[in-house]
Image 1: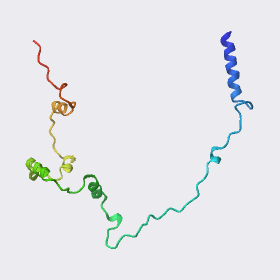
Image 2 (image 1 turned 90 degrees about the vertical axis):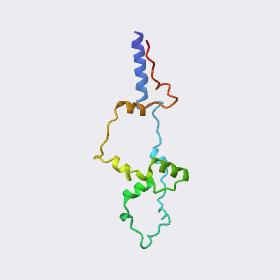
Image 3 (image 1 turned 135 degrees about the horizontal axis):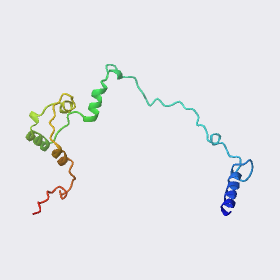
Image 4 (image 1 turned 90 degrees about the horizontal axis):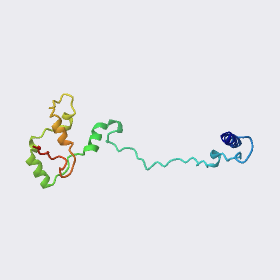
Amino acid sequence: MRKLILAAGLVSTLSACGGGGGLFNRERPDEFAVSRQAPLVIPPDFALVPPAPGTPAAAAVDSRSEAMQAMFGGPAARSASESAALNAAGRANAASGIRSSVGDPDTQVVDKGATTRDIIAAPEGDGQEARAATPQP
C-alpha cells in the first residue's frame, strides 16, 4: 500500500512539471534573440602585393619538393666533430636517397626474427629486466 501511495505522489509531482500552468512554466527569453550580430566588415588586404616579374607563379612551384624541403631541410652546415664522426662512419660510401630506397616496394629486406625485434623493443633502463636467468640445478 505504501508503494502505491508513493508511486501516485511521484506521478502527480511529475505531471505538474510539464503541465499547462504552475511554477515551472514561465516565459523564457529566446537565446538567439539575445545575442548580438556583429556588423559585416571588409577584411584588410594584409598588404598583398602582386608577384615580382620573373618569379614563378604559385601553381608552377613543385609542392612535393617544397614539402620535402620543409620536412627534412636542405644541406645543413656540420660542425667539425660531426663531420669527423660521419666520415669515420663511412659517409662517402653511404647510399644517397636512402629514405626513398627503403620505402620502395622492390627493396629486398631480411627478416632478422623475433630475437632482434625483442632486443629493439626491450625496455630502457639498467637492464634488470633483460638479464638472463641462471639455470637452477
